[in-house]
Amino acid sequence: MRHMAIVRNIVILTGAGISAESGLRTFRAEDGLWEDHPVEQVATPEGFRRDSALVQRFYDERRANVLAAQPNAAHLALGQLDREWQGQLLIVTQNIDDLHERAGAGRALHMHGEALSVWCIACDARHRWEETLRDGPPCPSCGKAALRPDIVWFGEMPYRMDEIYAALSRADLFVSIGTSGAVYPAAGFVQEATRCGARTLELNLERSLGSGMFDETRLGPASELVPAWVAEMLGGD
Ligand code: APR
Image (cartoon, protein in one colour):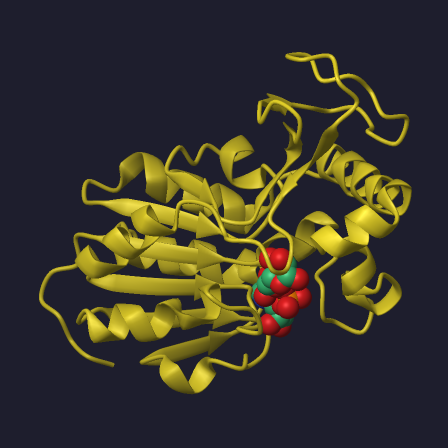
């Protein structure tokens, strides 16, 4: 691991693995979401045009699961780090759940959208949403039945990429938690962080596609690895 005297600026990337112990399915495990929901049908703009009812039902179910889930020890530890860390910190999550925020993290950014947000494709408004979309409810702004999940689908541009790259360029430490490294641009953040001189650490249940690109990889459940790492960072260990 590249030793660096001082760590002030941290970028953390999280994926589905950090929410697995909160009962939210990951995507590519044996019992993963993509095992019984073909990606091209439920997570592409083309799939939505072909069968919007199927897509709305899929995300209605995910929205209900998110509302029923609770943050776990890993989310809570990152919430504590967010509150106590004096330097710069950005939690970039690929997850559409709000468990980081419910665990007290104020510096979280959803690059793939949010389950509890909808987007009107008629007037471009976004609204917080906890109900279903399958019955085509009217947009609260324009009244048109043109609401879609506010989710970044395959083939669409992730959100707030400029902010993410700006934070990576200032990072002293890049930490990846619970992601398989299967999807770009997120899977390329470790290379960008390394190029900008940061140390890189992976916390994951199993080796990922990107493990070879990290200075250090620690294997185990996020609910154990993340609190231990946060204690190290806050000097509690
Ligand atoms: N603790 C830590 N890591 C875990 C745990 C756990 N309890 N459970 C699973 N993992 C790890 C797995 O080993 C795997 O490497 O989390 C990773 C989950 O990988 P994926 O299912 O591929 O999910 P993710 O990497 O978040 O997917 C990226 O792909 O499908 C799209 O838009 C979707 O945001 C998603 C993106």
